[in-house]
Length: 246
Image 1 (spheres, rainbow, N blue to C red):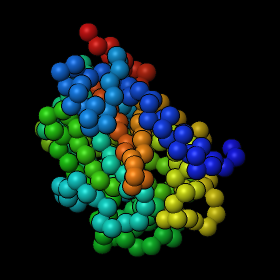
Image 2: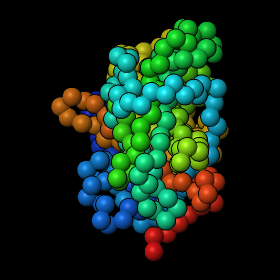
Image 3: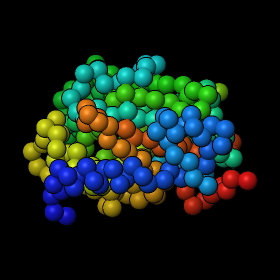
Image 4: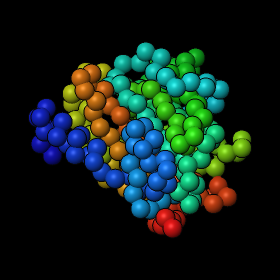
């Protein structure tokens, strides 16, 4: 794909911001959730269970701002947790973790010769969902590392039990435009994995892609995903669980 101009990139991101999320939201909560950056449709899709990967730890950091000063495009990430009948779930625990702009995870030994960040805790945190089922994190757009496309990990807990472990993905045009436009993501060598070739992203399906929009005038980013939780905490494929709003 040829490089996008600055105008083209902005057009792409604005167009993607209009893409619907695969979840229905009760009418009474529609205005509140819309203000949080989420959009309702007529169906709920339960998110698939995806690999936790080797980098999960529970640092017990209940906080909204998880950046700890890491360089990168500022991103407000909102996850709305809903039940199979599309009802927002308040009081759910949501853990989020992802790599920094250079592909480094905190708190663990990084693969591929990356810097040792075992004593750090950047880009990890926990939030409880509010009355609209929304957990909000202030973070940065994730970088990449060899063998994986761009992604964010998350876990959902209900009553102390983990009911879903999954990942969030972003449209490939968004990934590349951000990496091209922001110096924090500059790397030696090219990315070796994109969405279409990533096995885990392929398993996730379109419902695991965040809705995004750019905010002005600061040039920051907002991203949101509706997270459907399967009955009794059993997460299945997106096509295995399709619930239409009554």
